[in-house]
Image (cartoon, rainbow, N blue to C red; front, side, top):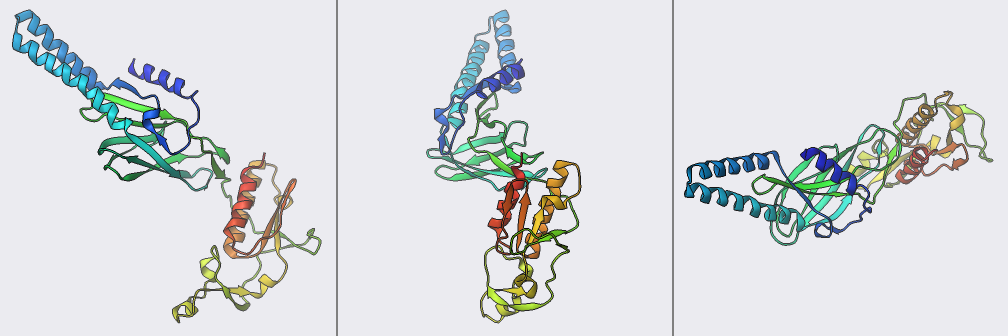
Length: 316
């Protein structure tokens, strides 16, 4: 019965508005129900009352009423333990389909310490921590992904059974944020189209060579680690990246037409793998998709890589 009631309340809260951060829990509707321990506690009180009535035992009545008063007061402390919290911020990073999104949620108590606060998305792993007064504590929550595109998580649930575990209080929150999931990379031979002056090159080539050293250039964030001139850094001459003769030639295109498979999702996954390989190799590369052409960006640029992966993730 308790599970049926809780599921009915979850369905009601799922129709509520989406929330943005920061968010004070006191502004939300807070629910509370007895736990299994609470039902057992109530049964014990009723048993004591029944025995006291049967034997006309006044100390028994006093003890039963004392336990009942303690249980009723615990409802106030259980709700207060959750109500005084504030959701400060959250952050996450895009992942590939099938991987976990790690959702970092910061909670803060501006008044007194809060104990045994449990946080987790519905049907996902729950994390329980204490929150000291005046400090923000980060809860690192996992979210499982199955397919590429925009991922909308289930309700975020904050709950507590402090202090006695007789009642469980919780809030169910629909987060405003949507999360981007990249396609799952599937290995594919590195075959790409060369860029010509018109941008319509038809030749193909294997992975461009990187054996002929050209010169050094200032390190740029996102440059592959294997391109860093470690010996120069060890001599105290600063952080530099190596460039090669192949980089001064034509850029390459990763093209939708170069993947010969009839499965659309498999083709997208192959293209995702090629983008990752091109980024790791440090060659200038572009991406050709139906109706979309992304010109080659700077070799090794994270922003360019993420733009290509986002285009693949958002393909209809």
